[in-house]
Image 1 (cartoon, one colour):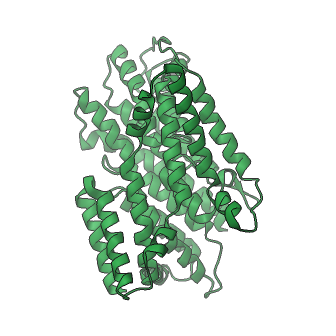
Image 2 (cartoon, rainbow, N blue to C red):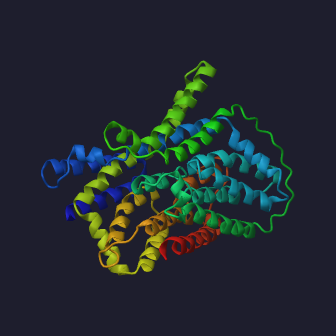
Image 3 (tube, helix red, strand yellow):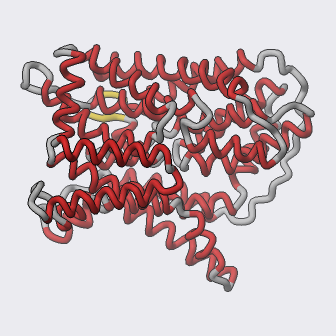
Length: 439
């Protein structure tokens, strides 16, 4: 176990310091675990490693990314944002509405993609009103991060949870006779919206905006809606007994996302008499994330077989004791702090089996349902990234856009919005999840 822990810690340290090479570090670490298995150190080999990969998760992420690319190219998000801005009375509400809109989009679209969609509108509005776009784009970014936990397809971490806990699209709204995590996220969104309105309380300049963006194709919008509808329908499909049908059943969500993406790309290519969109979609895929997850699935299975996951779960249990509330609190706020500095994707992927093991130890070994801990982990890890400029990819993307436009983002600029936004949203979600799932 000690050897596996050392390898994992080295892997994580390298991923933190050499972020450009994270996928290759994860894949190399997986290769080391497989090699150790082949030499008999662990009961782990290539077949077991490949079997540990959640292909449904990878297909969902890849397919959704492709559809999102088509959605952005259609210019529908920019037009919707402009339509919303024309309905607000002043800058304060314009910023709040833009952030809220980014959050709603982010519940169904990757966070970074959401920032790329909405940020140009924020820049244009700021230029027209002669105000700094820095707080506007920061608000858009942190709101995108918040809503990523609301639905199964909102963020990579949500997809990871769905795959690990066998949750379907509807489970995020209602599960086992209780309201799901979606409502906790929305409660956090309402509370954080009040915080944004307070932060921008002095910005009362009138807004004079026009709807200028022309939507070039409405089909990608229908694809986005179709993805959600079909994922909901797939949740009602009965599980087959076995064989090829069971394999397809386990891949159903990923195949839906991939199939709709292919339909959208094929249609676009046929209409344009060109294959350029294929290249655009492929370039739009976050290959680093897909490769990173592919490697991490194998690494985590390796450390699980070596006993590391159980040891970490034991450590959490010893710190919190047999007290579910204390353990839940530890998971939430430890996740918030850690995710402020490290990427939440490998963190959540690593912690999900830990949380599952912890739940099995509760009540003197009798165990308890792990959902309160799952939701606490997802809430803390998703929102913790909003505490710092480097804590989430959406924040980095927003700051990059600002720099390209000649604006410098200081740490103070970010913290002024990120800290109150995060604390208010986390506390709202923390209380909600415990009251619904912990008591």
